Picture 1 (cartoon, rainbow, N blue to C red):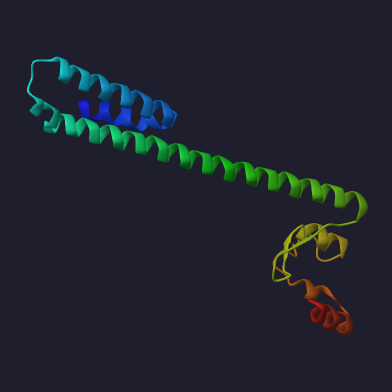
Picture 2 (picture 1 turned 45 degrees about the vertical axis):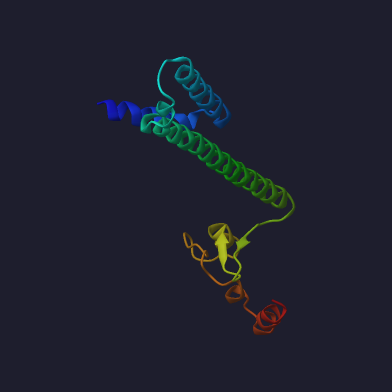
Length: 153
């Protein structure tokens, strides 16, 4: 049960700022050193394995807190960037929809990746059929236009 308490405490350090974790660990080690020096104990206690373990754990906790903080900042940046990209994409589609009858997205291989149903309705294809996954040049009926399109891309 004590192990679960310690584990929970270590995991919750990720919620703290690494600067606070470092500060309180330095304070803890400083007070331990002061207590050792003011006591009547030998100087060998300083090199006692318990004290060295405490220093090692303190350093590890500081490193862990800094690592978690760095990872969370990176994750937050990625999520914000994705949200901004999504909003810009949506705004662009909305703006284009005001000026054009239809907006269709193509991927890098010029395959229809979005708005396939709207394009199918616009072209009067089978009702309920989506054109997503269809190569754009396959929709061009005139062979000369298809060849010209392929030559330009």
